[in-house]
Length: 116
Image 1: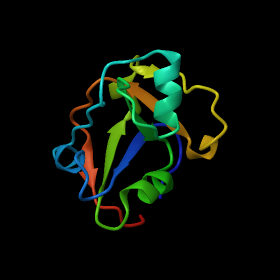
Image 2: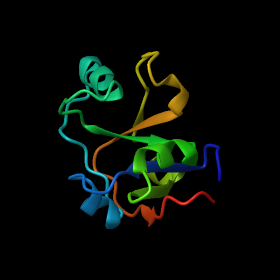
Image 3: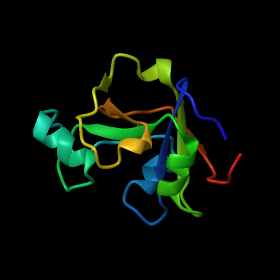
């Protein structure tokens, strides 16, 4: 298991609308909003049309989200450089090493959620 900052991970559980995209190495935000309210609600896992997807620098966190049958996307952080937005100061879930990336992400490597 790697934890650090050079690779970003995104866990996607099986049976969700985002799973088929993840199997193709794609992450698509629910909308386009980038205002503070949308970002805070996104971090709190509320239903909002935010223009970001959530990633983490810790594969173990992505594993929690993917479950046993999901997929973990991996992408080198420099590929999305310049597309990260600051995570709002929401205390809840602060331990997830969350990174918010603006827009559609393509070219991520889908991997199995086994522990490495």
